[in-house]
Amino acid sequence: MAVDLDIDRDDVRIAVVQYSEDTLVHFDLNTHKSQKDMIYAIRNLRPKGGRVLNTGAALQYVRSNIFTTASGSRYERGVPQLLIVMIGGESSDDVAASAEDLKTFGVLSIAIGLKNAVQRELESIAYSPRFLFNLPVFGELLSVQLEILSFLKSKMGTEPPTIIGKKCSLYLDVVFLLDGSGDTRDGFPIMRQFVERMVDKFNIDENKDRVSVVQYSTQAQAHFLLNSYFSKRDVLKSLGNMQHRGGRPLNTGAALEYVKNHVFIASAGSRHFEGVPQILILVTGGRSQDDVRGPAAALKHEKIVPFSVGTQTADIIQLQAISYVPSHTFTVSQFDNLQSIEQELMSYVKRVPSQPRRLQSTLVGKDSFNY
Image 1 (cartoon, rainbow, N blue to C red):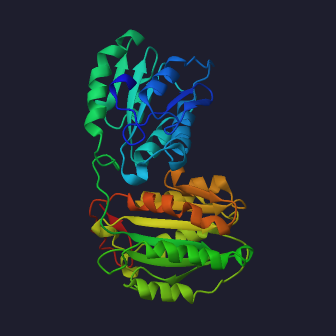
Image 2 (cartoon, rainbow, N blue to C red):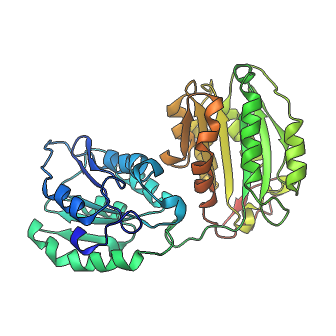
Image 3 (cartoon, one colour):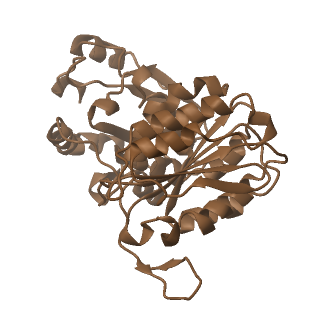
């Protein structure tokens, strides 16, 4: 395959990763700059061995460590991100969640099953059925090489995919949920600046992007709703006047319920029924004292897409439970480092696809929606 591709820093880049129970990177996307070096490295590959196959962990590894700017990925420049997965057996861990994570990020995965590969795992990995090849023996790899190569070349220079059959929305409803507990007092000004920088990247207007900010500790309180301000100037002015609330304990679960019932509703400015993506960005520095899984599941059921940003004092398990998919979870050592994740977070937010239009419920007193 590499022989037939134009390997160059400004053309095609290739990484090779091998896995069994753990993952081994042979080289990243920015390691080899010529076809000669690439082919030499490939010819010197040796099987790593191992009896346990953790395909899910391997998929998550390449998403988090290979398809990144530091490893040579050019996804931020719109270069298509392609993954060819060759599997010879059944995975010992869950594959579906990691596969969906890759698709959400925009990676187009081709699944090649060999010998004892499991069809359902291949189906979950492949971006669509046409990108799935299940071969009885290794020798048949040559039979699909030309088809895969032709497909790879056809994708060069095209836009990266989002989610199957869906297009990114032209505008968004974004709610920032900020930890205003006593433990974040020193970091709150930095948290506020983070929101201000994020807001500056949106196109704030009644008919474009809408933003809301909610602060919480024991209880949640909206600083302003999605229909409070329709200009960037007014949003930033209100943010500048926002004061830290304080309070203990930290009840993130209750705050998630609050935004679902009081902010992501039509009377508060949500355009959920119009199909506008509903996005929640949680920023926290601590562990919630109440349950987050139930409220997070309720948000996702309503097609609300949560992102979680936490410091090292936050509970990573809780953050991942809240996030729509694992890659929607971002961690920083302290609030001072929030700026380091802004660009990647925004790239994810901008790629959330629009939803089908929904019929507004006619039930009196209910801010719910039905398909």
